[in-house]
Image (cartoon, rainbow over all chains, first blue to last red):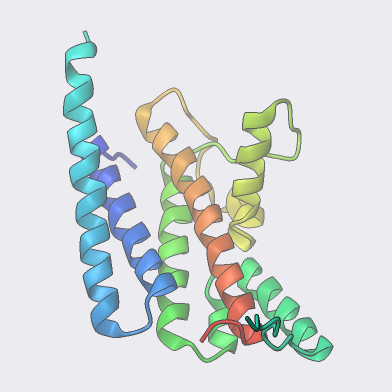
Length: 58
Length: 136
């Protein structure tokens, strides 16, 4: 099985956000909001850190 | 000034024993604890989430730590892997090929399997708290 860094990031963000949403929120609407925000935060922050590290990669 | 010292009602010994049983079930099979507590949606999401990470970790040929602990990193890896419960014990039977962390995918696999264990431990704690009545 092969996986790119980005695919791994998406899988991690998606599954972790869903589990966190169900662990911390009770109402379906709150869970959806939490899962979406958490997913976006994982992806955007990871991409931002990746770009910040880019100048030091060579 | 009158300060209240009342503490929340402690669960009975029988309820704590039942909660331990549910926590054990939740650890062995992800989501089973919530299934026993009739929390259907949580049971389904926790089972699918932990299984996705554990199976992806195995399929990517990630390293599963055994009990031979050499340093703090290996100890943390072992404890997080152990958190995956049944998947930890089944990992060597489910793996089609031995671990290979020389590739990036193998490294992802190691992290995914560790994440499966940590998430499952959070789910176990959640099931225990619900079973004791401390959480709704």
